[in-house]
Length: 367
Ligand SMILES: *Cc1c(COP(=O)(O)O)cnc(C)c1O
Image (cartoon, rainbow, N blue to C red; front, side):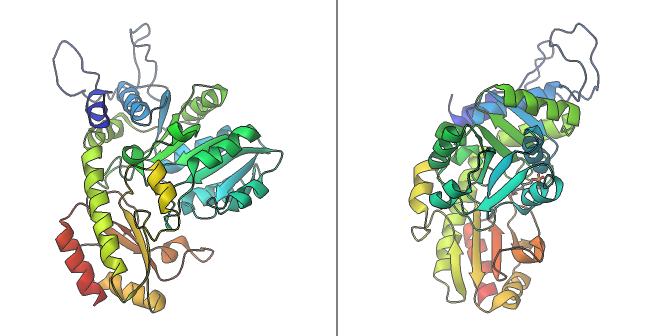
């Protein structure tokens, strides 16, 4: 089955006696002992979560998937599953919430080194004898840096460490890190997988059901940060249109990025689909398309960037990404005083409005 077909036909367990076309929501928290499906209690398993996990594993070409109540819960599950005293190599540009989780929650438990993951020598120099996890995010948030997944996978293999990739920006439509040698994929399903800015969720997908995966399953089950059956239902519903939404996001993003490059008020555009992106070739090698996120810096500093945001009509000034509506924010203002993000950088989640309306709006705001 191809991606679009998998999205629709995997993980839709419909009860036979009703011939319902769509799997219903099973709200029950508990199941009578001896049931054929082996269900026990909804924190451990639930028909809607099972179905969601099946489709996620299929789309990421993994052996198994675990759904969580948020992207941060999924990422944090990986750090929880590591043996205490492990060393993590992580990107200098990554989702700030998971950066903060590594530093503020796990700072006393693990060691972490942040490096530019597109600089292979820097990554090699960061490796220690106790390095147990390479954490990558490609494209990265918010600088759209590209990491060569295969290169880091071979370093991880040589070290006997796990490679986990935050695939939120690319989505499984455009990138399958497991096929490039990653061991784990992480998603904030809150973003493109959910796609409508109305649910929180996270996921981990594994290449192999190994001992580390058993540990992850324990964190999910015993830690208990699981999504509700209703959230699993809505997420499964959204995933059925993921491939088509992503095509729209990527084509709008490319057109907006190209427009921004031509604008005199714009200092620099960050989009891996542009030939001027320093790692465009790596992106083209490992991605089918370049996603819906574009960042750019505005001449005149933070105030000029804020002014552009204030003049926009269709781009909502809000955090988050991946919904049908376009969002924009000055990222440094959100990330706080320790951020390395340029003060005048605007991050855009390019939505599914008509591209001509988006470009006209951006044009009047810059002008
Ligand atoms: C939003 C986001 C997360 C965290 O996900 P939540 O669902 O908000 O917990 C992690 N990684 C990336 C790249 C994100 O954009």
